Image 1 (tube, rainbow, N blue to C red):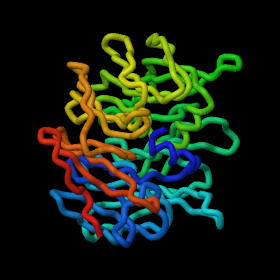
Image 2 (image 1 turned 45 degrees about the vertical axis):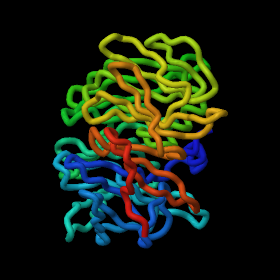
Image 3 (image 1 turned 180 degrees about the vertical axis):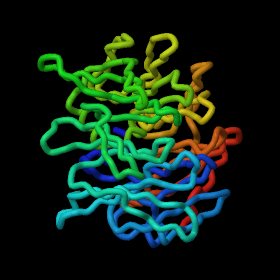
Length: 359
């Protein structure tokens, strides 16, 4: 089983501190005051910006709870993050959605607080916030819109369990849930926030395990949409796609690729997590498996045109990965005590260097 699976036990509502690359190529993340990077931060931490090989510390943008940078604004001037409040057992009991600039004098501002579970907040082009709201009296989340200027909330769509933004024109790709008798179905659809129009792209049987994963993990750990919107990469547990039709299945999390233009799908790998398309959409990277027992995580590149794969040397043990630009991938390897080393690999040469210098 891949290293990242160990994080699944952390539970719904915890914040993953996945490094996030902004419009100008700056990578934002929270690091401990001791300089350590943790995927599940604990204790005091602050915002760090990785620019041109240097670390810019924004100690004025701080948190003393679970935190992670969840989105950049369209112009790259602001970040969006959640800070949780916890009980004496370390379980989250409230979620604070905050916004902050990235300048040296920026201070975080709380947009709103909720004792309901808040998931996946993202900016709209106008600076409002979309997010998933899981209320105690509802079985499934609602996709919400928070107008920052008017301080007003609106329900956009019911029963959405995960979503990704597709560009800045108001188009989202959502995964919503329905029930057919005793069977749960998940529907992958495009959704236009401006017109409320929905078009189904694909569907799959939704096992309890897969439903739990969609609640626990950020969308980026399980699926991604190419910049053009033509392809969707999707890691599925315990079931196969229904539409577009796919045969065969396994107990491992296989990685599927849906081709919207061809209305078809195929399996990229028997094991694949954290799928991510390059900025130009030509490559799909993911954490697959290698080794004699095919159980050692490693970053793999998949060429969408040639369908060729390349295992990236030096990435064994990767727990997450992300694109920095079309020529550079970032990845994290656990070094003990829930701390991780952030590295990057330059694709033309295969050279691996530190992304976040050791403290």
